Image 1 (cartoon, rainbow, N blue to C red):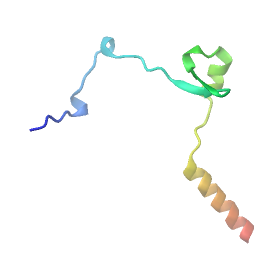
Image 2 (image 1 turned 180 degrees about the vertical axis):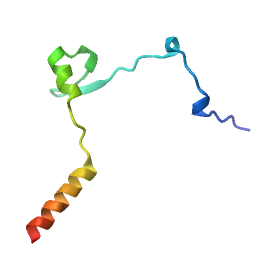
Image 3 (image 1 turned 120 degrees about the horizontal axis):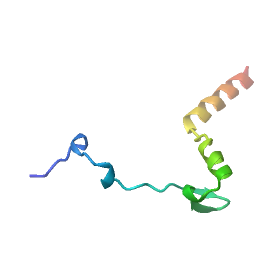
Image 4 (image 1 turned 90 degrees about the vertical axis):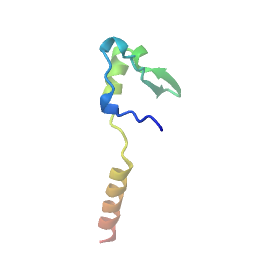
Length: 68
């Protein structure tokens, strides 16, 4: 019999948690965001993630308008 763990049953105290370090690519190499200067951190947090579905819909709409 296999043991199944329900994720809702897992409880961690704050002292048991481990911080997660976020890395990103800057100027061709990867660096942790925690080492960015104040300006670069601000720029990083205002970035917008690329969404392929949104881009495809926009492209299809532009193609339809061009065909008219």
